Length: 126
Image (cartoon, helix red, strand yellow):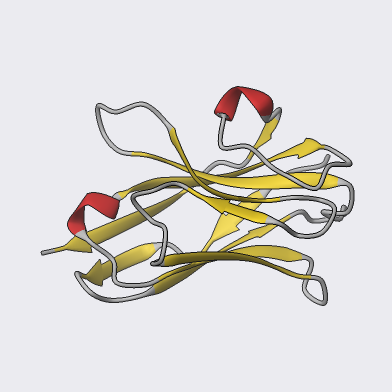
């Protein structure tokens, strides 16, 4: 059964860094746009970053622009989210998601993605 698996979450102090990974055991990310989303308690799930299937073009939500970086590691078949200068407001469950696509751009609209992982918790202490 195809699945997306997130890893790398944990507890970190404000100002610290974490790298999340999204893998697809038995599959690849070729032909898919990949997005990272997060959901804090009591809040809607929001888009954080995405990377397109063609050209690996990236897009970031304003709150994380300049602090987070999304990239593909083709050797490991993962899509990583490097998170730097973390803030307490970054605390959330982080999800990766994919949608089959042959586009040079991606979207942070969660309704455009049809396959999701189970999420990984990121907690940033003040």
